[in-house]
Amino acid sequence: MNNTLHALSSGDGAHVVLLHGLFGQGSNLRGVARALQSDFTVHCVDLPDHGRSMWRDRASLDDYAACVAGWMHDKGIGRAHILGHSLGGKVAMQLALSRPEQVDKLVVADVAPVAYEGNHDAIVAALEAVAEEECASRAEAEAILREAIADPGVVGYLLMGLARVGDHYTWRFHLKGLKAGYARLREPPTGSESHSGPTLFLRGADSAYVQRQHEPEIVRRFPNSSLETLQAAGHWLHVDQPEQFNAAVAAFLM
Image 1: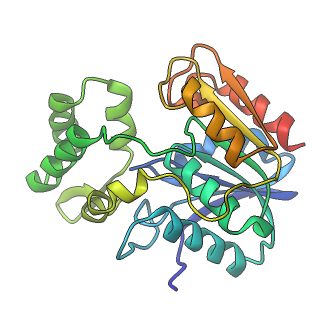
Image 2 (image 1 turned 90 degrees about the vertical axis):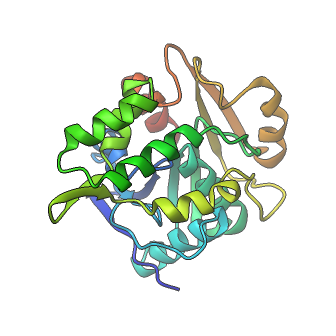
Image 3 (image 1 turned 90 degrees about the horizontal axis):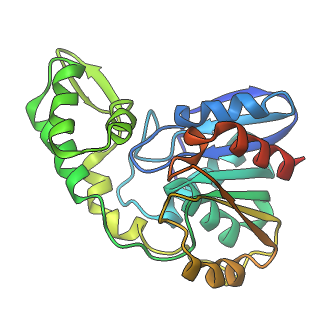
């Protein structure tokens, strides 16, 4: 398997692997890394099909988790704390359920081990429009995104995935592959029925990703887990409430 994943590493101590969300990259979690790097060696990993990592033939949670596991092995990291946000949280859960020997403590940020309805059609269409336009500036790309996406925070998040290639901008992530694998990435993690390791679920009070009806499945799949809600935080809870988020993560991992 080609396990060429790109990662930014910093700090010293026990290993912590950070996994970002859909259409993101490892640098999205640099704020978390800075908060932890005085006590841990922190790795901000670009998931497959994202950032500067390799593109896969078939996007799926199991494939992504296998790639992370292979990257850890190649780096001599036998076991690590794993933190994942959104899609990264699903990959983190998949890793814990299928390869528990590689996972110490697990932190899952604003996602549950359930199947989700598709809600990215407008975003994908806007991303495709930017790619087709071959924008000569970031401003052109931003204007296209703003026509379709009302939330400026989402627009800003997506713009971080732009890269200049020659005389125009393109997406770092594998848009075609992610679109083709979108249904698989929305599925619940597979592997063992449950993971008994210590697990912390963090959710934003203003987010709909982790709802009350998801809690029994969280307990079933992760019986040694706790669930904390961050007030005044949405899906990007580590951005909305960085101090609360980082403090909760650090207290759990220590």
